[in-house]
Amino acid sequence: MPGAIIEGKEIRASVREEVDVCIIGSGAGGAVMAKELAQKGARVIVLEEGGYYTRSNYPKTIRECFLKLYRNHGMETTVGIPAIIVPTGKCLGGTTVINMGTCFRLPPATHKKWEEMGITGYSEAEMSPYYEQVEKVMSVREVSPEVMGRNGEVIAEGARRMGLHPKPLKHNINEHCKGCGNCSYGCREDAKQAMTLNYIPQAVNFGAKFFCNSKGEFILHDGKKVMGVQGSVRDPENGMFRHHIQISSDIVILAAGALNTPVILLKNEICNESGQAGKNLKLHLCGRVIGFFDQEIKGHQGVGQCLMVDDFKDLGIMLEATFTGPASEFPGFPGFGKELWDMAKDFTQIASIGVMVSDVSKGRVTVGPDGESLMTYNLNQEDTDKLKKSMLISARILFAAGAKKVVTSTSCFPVINTPADVERFADKKVHAGDFITMAFHPMGTCRMGVQRKKSVVDLNLETWEVRNLFISDASVFPTSLGVNPQETIWAFAARCAEHIAKNVL
Image (cartoon, rainbow, N blue to C red; front, side, top):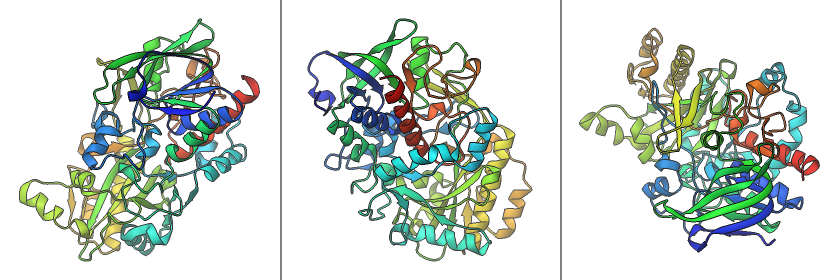
């Protein structure tokens, strides 16, 4: 069949199609699956709930970006202590369109942890070919000095003065990156290689169809094997129902993300014999530490997330030089009125470190009153203490770089005025509710495993209970990764697509 990207506004009647593979979700996992399986000769249809945006029609303002590219305007939030904002994408290409583009392979320590859990087939050596494959397609490379920006340079200087080992991050960017710093608002230069620039057009060239503004809702099956997907075409402007859509297929792949894939299973009352669907939510807890300097830095100029300090990875702590525009940087500032203004007016003189903690806390995704995902998550004391430690390290780096004062993401010690105050903060007992926390990497809610009673999918990412129903997103990860997950999602998808092509099609 001829490939195409079909927007919701173009669909004028109910849709019925018969194909080999139906995929729900067009992000990191779904797009790779679509291309790989279409290339191997399968007839593929992808259902994407969001709209289709390109360089020519990207939202023109940051407000529009959050309205059109993000799910729930970027304000998906956990219920628990503290409340944690978990922004995800809802558009063709998924979160790859609005993330920072940071790329990591799975760390050796995580490989080892999985092997100890009995998980085979995912060693460094076994996964390396898949990583190489996706890195080539996605143009993964280190951030160059030309687009690093002063935020990264200042933080690198402070880290080196402390005897640490800062390194440029790797991103899925091409040679056209100008370091404009707008990664999280959608790349208007087509430099960040979101799925809409590579895997999706390649999938279309191989005959795949992508239906946008089309929500896959019901998994059709006979109790043992999938038979397809039923859903609805929604109005792009208000999300209201317009038409039915039904895809008959021998294979169904859920790639709706760790927050929505378990909801589909729970609403369909399938694949939860183990009771694990929606459980084991991991988030990678994030906060921000900001240094105020006498010099002009203009941190918003340069790649938004450009540098890492991984000296503390064995403690589950990753530090990444991260800077966004005023709309999303200012909310991290403490105070009101004149106090807030006195900080905000010095915006060009700040440097910012994003802290990321590999969490041992666990949350859960259930079906909320509106039929959408509802996250519950409480931060335990171990992760609370790790968050504090990550902020202490970041504050020391910023003072070593010459900061005059430092602002943290805590209510118990929001401003650190001197290096001596860092040690006062170190002695302070902290509680989960003291932190202003975000998280960008939900995972684990349909984890893979070797025991049917303790997992949702097997090691080939096929659900235990319904044949030919596969999951290809971060929900399958059995533990927190410790690094940004998108490259591992790609590699998992490439591996799973190879298995399906060899053994199922």
